[in-house]
Structures are given as C-alpha cells and as structure tokens.
Amino acid sequence: MRRDNRISEILSTFALALAPSVAAILIAGGSSARDNFGIPVLYGYSLLYVSTDSMVGFQEDSLPQGTGVLVRKVQPSTLSIGDVVTFYDRRIEAMNTHRLVAAPVYENGMYRFHTMGDNRKSALYSYEGERFTEKELLGKVEVHSDAISFLLAAFSPSISAMAETMGNLSQAFLFPLFTLLPLGIFTVVATISGIREWFREEEEQSKRDVASLSMQRLKQEVTSC
Image (cartoon, rainbow, N blue to C red; front, side, top):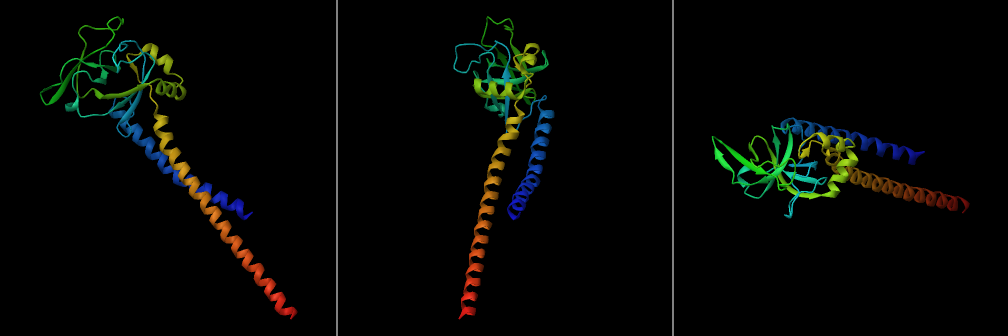
C-alpha cells in the first residue's frame, strides 16, 4: 500500500509540474504564429513542407518537392546572394521559399529582397521573380530533409491536401515536435528523479526494518537471560 501511495505521489507531482510547461509552450507557439503569418517560431526555428517543384535543381541546397525544411530566423543584413529564404508571398497569400538572386537593398529604413525559384521548367517559374521586404521574411533555410517531411506528415495528416492548393511552402508545420521534444526531456528527467527517490526511500525503510528486527531480537535475548 505504501509503495502504491508513493507511485501515486510521484505521478501527481509530475502532472502538476508538467502543466505549466505545456501551457508556456502552447502560449509561446500561438503568440509567435500571430506575428509570423500563422507559422509558429520556437527558439528561432520553424519547420515547413515544400509542396511544389519550383526549387528542384542541381545545387546542394535546391529543394526537392515533398521535402521538409528547417527555417531559422536571421537578421536581414546577414543574407546574401544565393541564400535560400522563406517569406510570405502576398501574391499567393502563402509562405514561399526561393533563392536570393540579388544582394539585399536597404531602402527607406528596411531591407528589400529579390528571389527566384531554381527550376525554370516548373509551371510556377517566374522570370520576374518575387520582391518583398524584411517584414515578409520568415528566415533562412538551414537544412532540408525527407525525415522532416515524414514527421510533418505524421503529425499533420492534412498536409498533402494543403500542399495541392498552396504555394511553394504550405503553412503546415510541426508544432508538436517543438512541444513534445522539451516535454519528453522533462518527462525522462522527472521520471528518473522520481524513481531514484522512491528507491532511496525503499532502501532507508529496509534499513529501518532491519534495525528494528535486530533490536527486537536483542531484547528477546536479554529477556531470556
């Protein structure tokens, strides 16, 4: 009974400690989404899904259709020609990811950018490219991977349907990953700590039981004498 009560206490403590963490992460994600065209940004990073072939190419950082990308917020002044960036394209009212084909221009108190897709054979290719300001910039693509797209599809089943109707990057994202990762770490640490505390108390109780039994035996021996 005592062991069951201890386990119940550990679980209750864990639940109480976990609730504020969940709330904080959800609030942070929701708040950042409102400031980034619906895309949550946690710890400066976002995950998105490439839904078209406009960035298919032979460069190392070209983006195959269906891949996932990790986008990092950066200072506009650090970007240069050749960088692949994600931005809100007001023409299609969705996120878009293309390559900078001109150096950023600082004008009227803000940076302005000019991008184009890598794939000139794509039906979406535009010889004029896209022009936008730092206000529409989400960040720079740091890495792309099929593993990211797999996780996106797993956590966002509607991603395929969204990809058919949106631009280069759908607004699907992997917010659960950012939520589950820190919570998973917290869970492991809290569980290990709870188990260690339980074993420590069990060991101390065993020592007390042994000491009590030894004392009883000693008293019996004294009485018999």
